[in-house]
Amino acid sequence: MTSETPPTFLWHTNSDSAVPVENSFLFAEALLKNKVPLEMHIYPQGVHGLSLGTEETKAIDNELTLQPEVSNWIEMAGRWIKGL
Image (cartoon, rainbow, N blue to C red):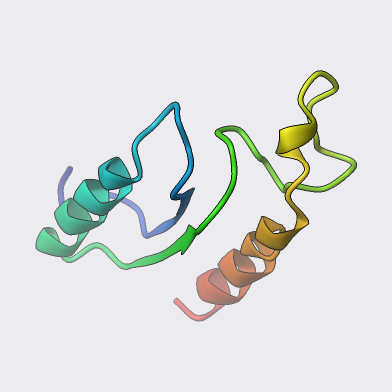
């Protein structure tokens, strides 16, 4: 990671069992040290691979990927990018 790393919008869930949420905090810390613009959001619940968390993007074999409370990340990311 360098100061040339692109601006980063980062989101994660506390209950992701595939990738510990601490990894996102470490990544954010490295971005900050390199003065890379970032926005980060941590949701309390959600399995790994949620995508948008909507009916349209849920996994066929995993009802847990339906988490509409995380679906706002795409709008937040869009607003953030426009503000750069």
